[in-house]
Length: 267
Image (cartoon, helix red, strand yellow):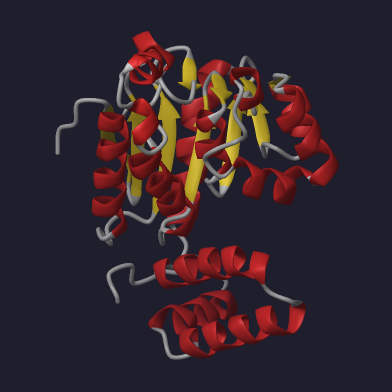
């Protein structure tokens, strides 16, 4: 489909690319963008020809969070005090969908990722950053607490102390510092960012689809489980995979010292 605020492309077999496309506003999120994202994510998540998703931003920024011009207009409306927080109903489900969808998601952070924009990147499974990217949990500078999953994702990625420092100061981190603390997986030159992210996505997309989906699900669920519960959860996943064509093909390929040929269309 054609969208007003995002672009959806297929840069490689099994890979979809969503580009946030409001570069004149730093790809700031407005309700229309959140709705476009939710529609696209829902459609891609049910399209079994897509096995990995990459998310990036157009122009110089990944995402600046809420569009502050529209936010200011909202705050000046007479009825603002009687309504729910700006963007809440449409933006929260996007973060949840990125984290819970069956697709592994790679954030290609091409520039600034702040406040809700950083939280969108945190909800992805893997983050690759341009060397010119800057990231910050900057809500505090606006007089807000992190409002889109940052207080959930940050401590799990960088630890409670660094998460508190980022959220309480609102300071920006450069890409190298983000790499040092585990906020991103890799830093590359700006011109290499999208090729690197798509290449990684294509490599992941070659893996068996059912195992990809189970692995993402179990990694996410393990955040809420003790060791025994997590191992039991994984055990039942392995039990299910035991009857898949993928496992038989993987074992045969390993024994025959060849590349496996998985059936990506099986359900």
